[in-house]
Image 1 (tube, one colour):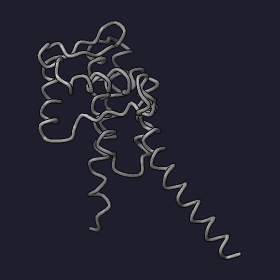
Image 2 (cartoon, one colour; image 1 turned 45 degrees about the vertical axis):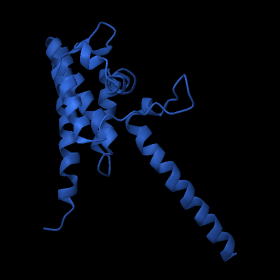
Image 3 (cartoon, helix red, strand yellow; image 1 turned 180 degrees about the vertical axis):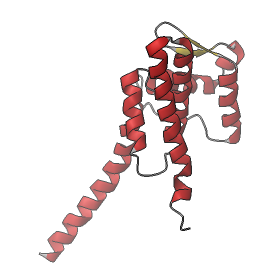
Length: 172
């Protein structure tokens, strides 16, 4: 009987460890867990692998983005837009990050109750969602502007909380 219980617990732990890792990423950005049409790989690009990648992301954002009527985001600078990292940036901005108020509110809610430090890809996607939200707030008027601004502030608070999380658990 003890043997069966031990095997069952081992199986449960293995399943739990596998499922929770995959589930935690899917909870924040479900679109990142979709399959690519052309291959069996997940649609899960990450821009930042080095300091140079961070600088390049900053250049993408400084080069001015174009957001068309269909909410597709593109880089205006043709030279930057031709880089391989620009294709990953395009995929993240147009396929993964949320673009509607309800989706962004859902993300903010999930981030506010997220129990641990965000993975770098989730942090990156949240920052890009914040950039998109700031753009929409700047382009909107009246009640819409207030709604987008509120979403921006909620994302900011979630990121600030994420950055402060390691320091809040240290003993005083």
